Length: 67
Image (spheres, rainbow, N blue to C red):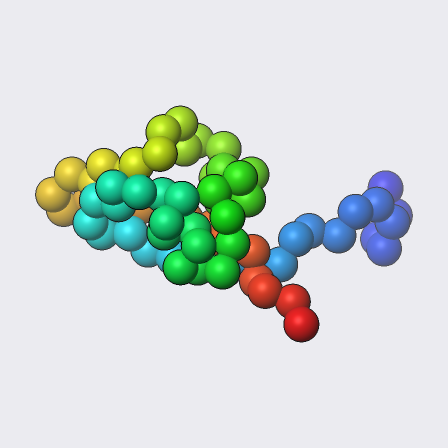
């Protein structure tokens, strides 16, 4: 496909998570988005919480808020 054709990638930023998030829907609201969008950008999330083991971290992709 020639350059400039097709869909443009969505603007994102990443958030490093080093501790457990017990309520992802509340976390998403704190990040100015919602749980459905959080799941859209991170399809590997399968639950309403994110358990992070010691010395582990996750990177969550989130949309950049447009004006």
